[in-house]
Image (cartoon, rainbow, N blue to C red; front, side):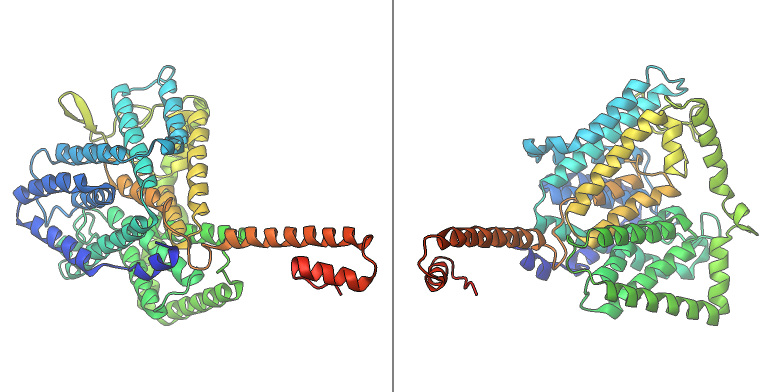
Length: 498
């Protein structure tokens, strides 16, 4: 099936998938027994194939982060969640092609560097670090390998699934606005919808918002106004959630995508600078007019930037700057080794660790800024090796020449500038890894899928004409006249020499 056929089959949202997800999430409100049954269902669902595994795992993430005011969880739900993840990893690896093993070498290399650092680190919780590293390596490698076995059609359809999943979360969250004790249950300020935290609700919307913005700026959506309305709605929800990290991720992902498209215009032949400038200008003017004419919108934006009673930029950023400063200072004191993967310099966080059969299955840490956090935990050696992982994955995604998925990929990465979740493969980080894996397999944008073959054909044609011209010139010394030469060249190459 060619790329043109895939484009015609691709859907923004599947109504059937949307109703399925809404139905499942709705049934989970009936009690903790239904939640336990849902995990069993997910375990059976993922056995059907790699696409089904990705669907089941992404839905498992949403189930884990549901609003506790609306949902009750059975005892041992954390073990159930890990059971689904482990089984999903096995299924992904089961469908792996041997020739694809090389694509996980950067991830394996990073894990080996971190493992080697355990020998020399002053780690206050080594057992937790070892378990976190094992699970990160297992899950991330399984996802990358499993997604490499997807066909382009399957990858495209999984894009529809992710959109449907996020649409279900949004649609179920909208009625919650009417119940403040549910909508703002976590802190009384940030909207969390049907999820358990504003910092879960906002960032989950960021990849979808980035993908739709990329479609507007770099593609040619059939319904421009519909896409624009959806994007504005998602950004509005991000703002009311007060998740500044999510909006920053959207803006940074668009900047990164724009830079890639601009500097690699030959690979993105559908890109038109005039269209990009026109849409950007209109969007900026519309935003400025809307803010200037609405005092309510001004108040909301100011509350978004200066949340929790902040009065200036310094106090507004204090929730991140303090952690960044302490992480950087520890790195300067231990530049090569770090304190240990997934832990603090003093050991565990305030919630400690949850164990099952003697193994730690949960030990949450809250580290906002990925660059300084990874340097604090793994030192310069670990930081450089993980940077290599990000560069390698970025190159694979860019090579697919799909601007929507490129923006989604960058959003999954830039979310970590405020919430370092990329190593939390037992939580929301799992959803981002699933999106990253699929982003490495999607087909190109319309107008780019034949750019390289066209370039190669042009080179071949020019080479052929040069060869034929050289042959004709060599025959010049053997021809009796210029008329004979023209006739000979025309008969051999179909090209007239004037």
